[in-house]
Amino acid sequence: GWLIDQSKPIIFSMARLDRVKNITGLVEWYGKSTKLRELVNLVVVAGFQAAQKFNDKEEMEEIAKMHWLIEKYKLNGQMCWISSQLNRARNGELYRYIADTRGAFVQ
Image (cartoon, rainbow, N blue to C red; front, side, top):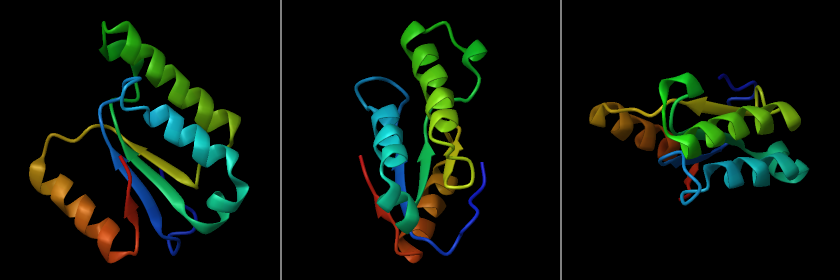
């Protein structure tokens, strides 16, 4: 994904893509809030974007729900979904970038 207005602060979350972590709930909350979407971008690092990579039914459902929410609320350009990262240095850089650009981490 990409962000149209990169001058906006970022709400950032990194978690497994499952019901307990509720990343899809965060995306839905963001999508429903016109005011929030005017003020900030959303960046999530969670799961993978292709459901075919998994045998786990719950994760496949959450992946499908993420795609559906992005379409429903037309979030392209306001939200960036990044597949899970295993590189610890890259994860650290993501956190630093969010902090340096006045963003907020949510969990």
